[in-house]
Length: 167
Image 1 (cartoon, rainbow, N blue to C red):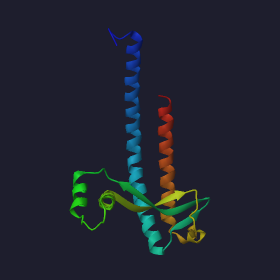
Image 2: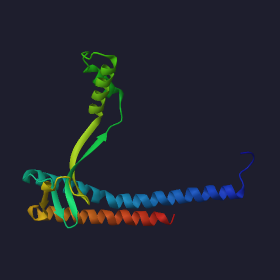
Image 3: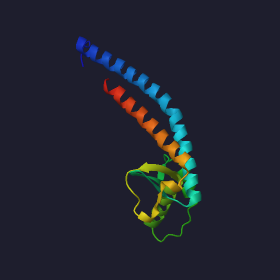
């Protein structure tokens, strides 16, 4: 680009900057509104998971949905420390170089992976229909708290999405 920017380019940059700032300000408002709801949802999910595990249940039928125990696997970014830990615990007992490399790679994956269970309301039933328990066997207060908190969160998320459409 040679020379000075045109008036049209200046206007475009100005509109981009002001729109970006407005969007960031709106997102902050909604982030502040979602923070306590997300904390409450985490607490309710933990209580519901504990209650379901104590009763030996894995799924409750709630109207046309299912409150199910599910797993979430997250992976941390690979660090030098993780690599060193995998190498430190390595014992040369594999027959080939490929086996040794695979063993180290598997060890690094297990170090960086974290799996946890949580409860989530889903539209799909579990594979085994025997796992479904009627919601009447659940702690009604926890289930109501879950559903109410989820509705509130969905409402705030929808408002956030709608408010940013105009930008």
